[in-house]
Amino acid sequence: MTAPVSSIRNLGSASDAAFAKAGITSAEQLRALGPDAAYAKLLETGARAHFIGYYAMVMGLQGRPWNDCQGEEKAALRRSFDKIKSQTVRKPPPDGSLPARLEGMLDRIGVR
Image (tube, rainbow, N blue to C red; front, top):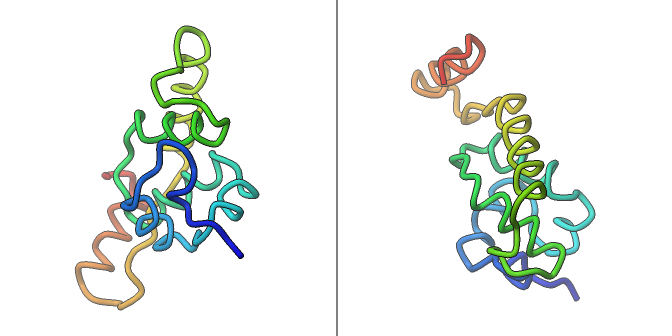
């Protein structure tokens, strides 16, 4: 039996829905992907980038409280977060509508 994403410390029921949208439906999948790849998938599906959400997930995967991150460890996570954010391109909705195509164009030229 698989455990929901929200079974990971620091992640709640809203995480289940957000990760499911990114194709990650279990805690096991999230652990297997690792925090950076999983967070990139979230961003690709339109989730807004939030540093606290990222490092809370990282801490949770380590079994630690979200606020346990400090000093150089937090600075290193910030660098990882910034790299993921800068390298991830949101995928436009697959419906081919004008707003979807426009979002795709804005992403390609780096406006968003």
